[in-house]
Length: 382
Length: 71
Image (cartoon, one colour):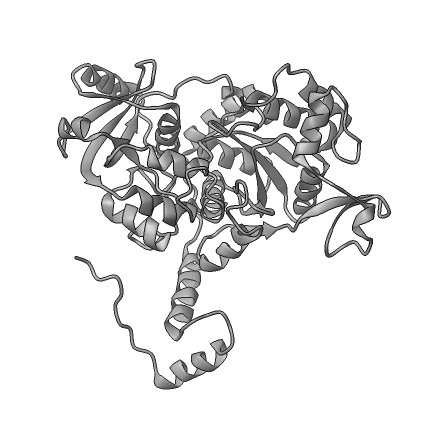
């Protein structure tokens, strides 16, 4: 089984007497309300998804991540995981103290053992992580709206917040046992924030040819306008796997996390998280984790050259299309025919047909999957 | 403040060999090459270890069965 990133699978979930003690102590602690995205970050830290992180980044690690794409101990880490508050709130907290983190419904989530408070430059953060300070980029917009002070320290999770998708939620501990039970020595991860079309299936099955199993791992959480809703993605993948995959070779579980749309840096981040889930390989396609035209189409593949010590093997796929002459999905290396023979896997085109109530051609999407999507009255985020 | 870099010695002959090997490649310096190779080597030396107790594993299997992931 592949080692977790940093060598140790982090587990900071309170149970039994320690949980009771924390709940009792929580009544007397200062409180800090988290948005759902930060709650996800806390849960991911506590359950080992973000191993080796045990809490929000301190200043030394934060600056190293910005400047070197590594933690201060040289371990690859490309996306800052930070907790922002305004100055007045920060002034009310002292390093060495504890803070109760609650969700938007005031439900206790975790205890933050505060270590540091520090300021940062938002434009620098945006430029280094996203390669731009253009506010039209959703990740940049979020950073520029962040508050001015970052809090760092280890967290202890009191309780996972229930979600409608818990049936699909597995921790790295659970996926590692699952892969072991299935007898998988090699596992390829497929990261997605979309419903599947034939091109996705082609990429997944090509990768599966060289590994024991595939871990389909949709990102569930805040996404941008026009993205498919989480329940639509899960229902469509459930239908695809049920009809077109071998049960002993494919599993699906969710990654509850905000998409940052940081392109290359996020591709490395995604690879690290799937390594923590127990995957030995990860599929990286064209413009992975990108948005608009901010990143060169294959920058998210080229960045892997900088991380020979990442530990998880990327499988790179070029752009693909359906060739009417070949009668199959092809890419630039496998098809000699002109573009006039090619049907592009356009997400926009598929979406427009579905919205009109038209089942797209079978070359683009499985009819069973299309029918599932069309059962939803409003399948897209508004 | 911690220094970002420190100096390591290698034989001159090896330095020259690396210089010749990286000539015309995208690797910008002997230092960059050595950093890359060392990082790669260190990551391979780490061996995978089991992270769960048998009891933990059995509890997890119960949940996986209940969710339909395993029979």
